[in-house]
Amino acid sequence: MLIYEAVHLLAEFLMKRPPGGRCNAVVIMPTRGDRDLGRFAGYVDFVVVDSEAAAERAEAAGLRWVLNKYRGKSGALATALETIDADLYVFIDDDAYPGEWIGLLKGMCGRFATAYRWVLDRLQNAFSLGGFDWMVWPATRFLYGGAMTVPAARRADAIEALKKCPVDDMALTALAERIEVLPLLIPMDPAEGTWEFSIRQAVAAKLGNLTLWAVELIYYWAWTIFAFFFPPLFAVHAVRTALRSRRALGEVDWLQVLLSPIERPLQAAIFLASAFKRCFTWRGAAVCKKCRITRRTARASTGV
Image (cartoon, rainbow, N blue to C red; front, top):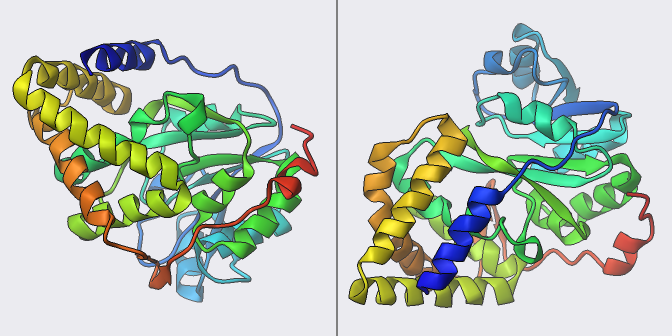
């Protein structure tokens, strides 16, 4: 376990930005509710809205808007892909804080790419940071829906996938064969309900990739048991948390580092609890099955 942690720490430290390019990239943000959109002025090209009230907020913030033709976030992304012409589509969430990372995603021309989150709630973040572990290795990467790109060459496939699946990141991850990851974390507002947020993420992982979910469950419990008998493992993990906070904030979040001893036990407990859940609630709807996007469809337009 200690060898694995050391190798993983080295892999995180050595993560580099993928080489960028120049293309006609548009930044699109679905929104609903009463988010303050002013912070996205100058960063976002189009906002996809569900209502006239949201459209008015977008206009007040100086943002162009498109009305969602379908339902939910997947519908909003499908609407944008059908309506807007571009070489690369950069999708971001309205609970993110814009910054350099948006420009880096705009350089991921011809590729599916993503950047992971740093939740601005230390307890939620303690659970959520487990997802970044699996971004390091190409075989276990996934598109995080808060910040991801879709190349125009896969536009038609992405529209079809999003219409089939109400969970956008599950749909597009099933479509992508290769995913580039930016070696940074994006500051984001916390979700409502820490327990509900954590369970939802774990159950979504189970539905999206049962094998990976099982590996995570075993790994988090094995790590927790091993660390009980070998406490220096907590120090290694604290270093990883410090490194991640610098990726997200530009400085070490020492309070998050102090919380790092609870990260693995918390992740182990949440993943165990998710074993008894068959569904999760996503934007008011129950999701109980995997998004089935055929690889035959995914290969049909490989112009990436």
